[in-house]
Length: 469
Picture 1 (spheres, rainbow, N blue to C red):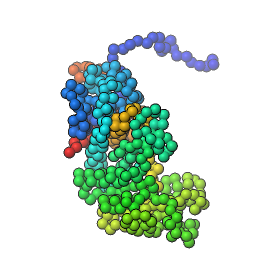
Picture 2: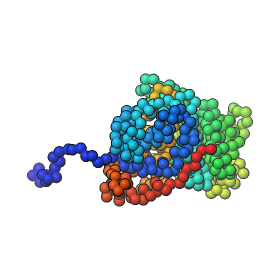
Picture 3: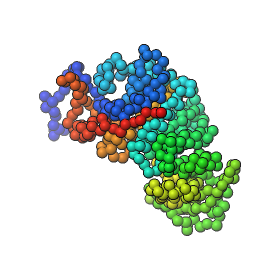
């Protein structure tokens, strides 16, 4: 204890006072909002939902949406009380580049979401479709790989929520249908909890809509591969994908008749495929469903795990899997895929890797849940919660696009929202007026640490977003 060096008297804090200067703790939010303003999201939102402003006396739709997106991207407090607290802060208004009286209260946010009661909330899907096209034009992929799945939002603790129904996870909540493209959630159908994956073929309808948009507004012949789990297994779905002119990889179920071609097969002689954390033995054959109107033979691949992590597994003792696909079965589609540089997808090894990457694709579910902060939705009405969730997905999409367009050198790979917020948003800044200009000031450590100068230039010159038709 004698060797402990105490701080000098002059270094100790003696008092706490109020400063008239505008200090903010989420300085990076200004970069996000500048990016949102410059890409042209304002025009797109006004084109799609601007007509819901019923009175010229109220705030413009975009004014409200912009502040909601800011709150969602910030993630500190997305409740209605959070809007009430921020409405009292002139510092927050300065960060949002608006006047203090333009900040909205929680009541205004409730009234905004109340506009989407009924069948208006799907309007937000048009916004998601257009920003999907925007990213396609920006990233210019040679082929498109889509993943379709549902995700459960656990609202079991909520007393009254319209559409809060029992889910397959034995929790009451909601189960939206998602379509992913890489880190982006490009389409959502918000649904009540009891809706299963293949409910009323809505997944096929959603895929068909995206394919139509891509073919009409982006490229008429770009190869598209749809990946889905066993919840979407059906003859009708696969036939619909084939009519759409897309490839698909679907996980199957362990039906007894599928094991018939394997009856005399020695699993120990099967070839293997090496994955990231596992290894599978596989066997290829053709099969067709026992039920359905048009039962055609399809390429089928049986896999059984033989190594998991560092542990070798006795083949045939762990749950097997069957994979159904039309990769390698349609000459015209296969030629397009090969011409686009996706010829490796025709090989069994790539198909198995793609099918067993469903777990990695579901990381998007973890990402959006972490981005939300809580799975509980705030309103009693179904349409209001749906609109709230669509805007949350939109904010998540924009955040991922910002990371790619502006902060790729700071965060070069996909990451969870907590890291992105901690790195790019959560730093202190001071906003001052000097020489007729508004200036944000940060410490030298922050300025050099995340290369503020470059970030500011890039968020002011992002790829522009085209408005909806």
